[in-house]
Image 1: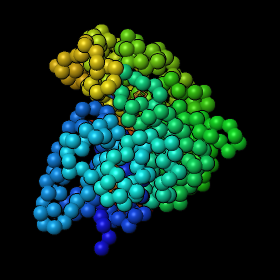
Image 2: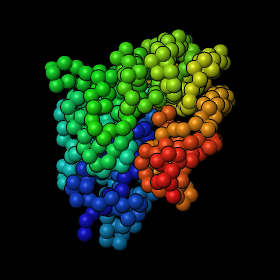
Image 3: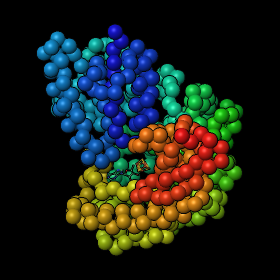
Image 4: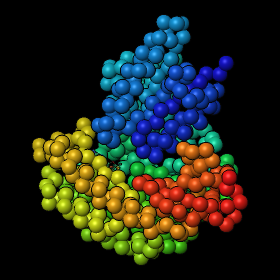
Length: 444
Ligand code: 5AD
Ligand code: SF4
């Protein structure tokens, strides 16, 4: 009987992409996917190291898996436990010391070596170097992903923001060649993808080798992919405000397949904190980028990431963040309490902010962001929106999808796909739609 695997994926979209690629590798080795750890021969946890909470979850998972493995062994069976992702990269040996039941530890740049690691039968337990050969060239073609697919075009980061582990866990910036990206996009489209989200830790720093011996930026890459028949929507994430070049901004004006939504993290609205964060831009720089983007695409919906309570952040600094949010008007945004990460410069600072102050600032920032999100969504009531319905909803017959502006929309739709709906109402985080036009005939 075929061996089975179960992957539990934490963290960002890049981790989701890596998990899907690791599933491709395992399928190529004859493994079959299973929905639960309890029925798997191999359990792989793809970990996130970005904030402390994600780490805590890993160790509780590992505790449970350790017990499961002991039970299996007592009954004459076995369980292989693999840890991948950014914690694997950051902690390596330490993971094995803390949880000896682990069989394999594999970093985000080494998982193309999984087949060899599994074949070595427990001897090659750790692979966390940054191998000279790009892993992408060694991966099997992507399997079926559904209507909306991720495609990694860039990895790593050279920015070294004070708080962030990414430059240490994902390594230096690397861009895949245009031809490799196009090839993977074609395969995803052949298997049904209508939407592709281009991924990179710093995706707008993309500079991939072009066929003509030159280098293509992200704007040029998007234009190339937009030529692929069958592809309806293109998105990209995550971007740095300093890397929003003219060509990429022009692509927002000129390329109809590029969706009118941009996740552009700013982290703080205080120049003092931005400098301490080593962000290499001011609040005014960010507002200028927003202005350029909106001039190119007036209906662009903006999203961002914020950190409250970075070491040294005063009440006045935090107020500057609220002011920036008020000035921009976001369609959605994520805010996080600063979490010291071992090995990063901000973690070593002595002026850490109290947990109470962080909690209080987070509540205030979230309230403002939520009111902006509600206002943004309210503006769509009674208006038509084209939604890519790709997931089942909570109620029978209901499906959930994304609008061009990245809003979550639910409606009663018979089959998945792109459907025009009219927005009938808004909930706390999603919109309710009613199919119109050709979509109405497809409605259940
Ligand atoms: N503490 C809190 N939030 C963090 N992020 C990154 N590192 C930290 C940290 N140490 C947030 C940033 C980033 C998002 C992915 O996670 O806002 O944009
Ligand atoms: Fe981390 Fe993003 Fe800063 Fe790079 S640009 S160090 S990934 S927060």
